[in-house]
Length: 222
Image 1 (tube, one colour):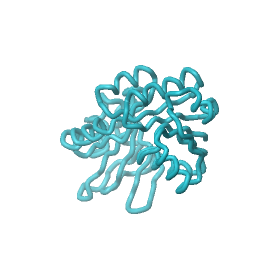
Image 2 (image 1 turned 45 degrees about the vertical axis):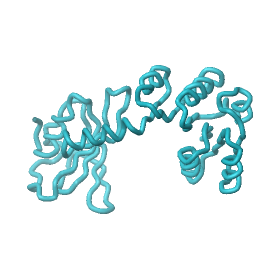
Image 3 (image 1 turned 120 degrees about the vertical axis):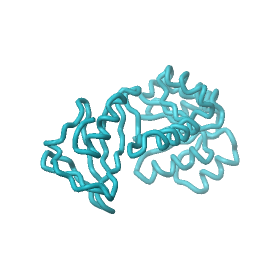
């Protein structure tokens, strides 16, 4: 996979290092010369000194070849323009952007830019921890229509009396995998039973989350 990153600060640099470690090709476009020199000195990647909102530097980065364009600067305007150029002028199939102000998140999403707002994520985690209890959101998919969630079965819960095939799971919900103990991953099938201490990863709709939680914790739908 080829990824172009606009912004070589801490966020952009960490993303680049992770991707390179996984064997992907990465180019960073960075406007500050000192950062460019540090990136070239410390990491094995292509760094372009320039403005990611300028088509000339996007062309130098061969953005038309990119599978993903990522904008990580502190300026939402820069991130938005750079992502829009990548999508409209270079037909990049996927644009992901850091969003520094949560009020801009809707605009990015409306323009088909995958927006990541740190403040929104932290607030969501806090709210969900306080209101949902054993059910933790891992990700929201398909524009909020499907949630990937984790349900933790308490260690002091009674032993299971039903297999997965016997449980009354809510419709449009499916258990993806079960983490058991320190290093065991259970791929679910009908004969599996859920044990105390299991971490259950499941897909469901927002409306059925509580039904799913009850089904997992009590062996029946709510």
